Image (cartoon, rainbow, N blue to C red; front, top):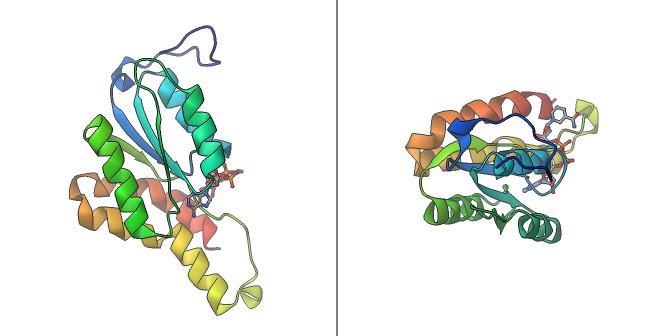
Length: 155
Ligand SMILES: NC(=O)c1ccc[n+]([C@@H]2O[C@H](COP(=O)([O-])OP(=O)(O)OC[C@H]3O[C@@H](n4cnc5c(N)ncnc54)[C@H](O)[C@@H]3O)[C@@H](O)[C@H]2O)c1
């Protein structure tokens, strides 16, 4: 919920109690998303490969629905599936997926090795297909959220 200790003054009642999953939520834009949804009373689950930052953020976000952090590298699709499942187990069906984790560094194609290419595909694209296969009800939102950043990240 909004209160004097957060910078979020707008109130969106439809988010209260809704389950949200955010990838790459421990820092940067993802952290802001985690904080903002939590401030609206949403049940926020988030993953990140930075366990220390994720644990520290989750510790701060208590209240009616304490945030749940699961350490996970989205390039490990089995671990990502387990992280999403853990959030569903804790909070119930996921209403919104924010596929935020990515590698947005720009490259000249001539400088991209085969291994670099595989790593970029893994962090920016590959994991789209895993949640879709396992959880068809969330696939459309996941793919839609992913597409905007993936296109830039692969450039
Ligand atoms: N910063 C910008 O100007 C900008 C502009 C357009 C789009 N974006 C997109 O917004 C998103 C977030 O941007 P940002 O600037 O906050 O990025 P950031 O690099 O500051 O933060 C990304 C977060 O994702 C985590 N992360 C990275 N790889 C991961 C992985 N494999 N598995 C799990 N977690 C991982 C990082 O630990 C970090 O917490 C990215 O998708 C980026 O492409 C950013």
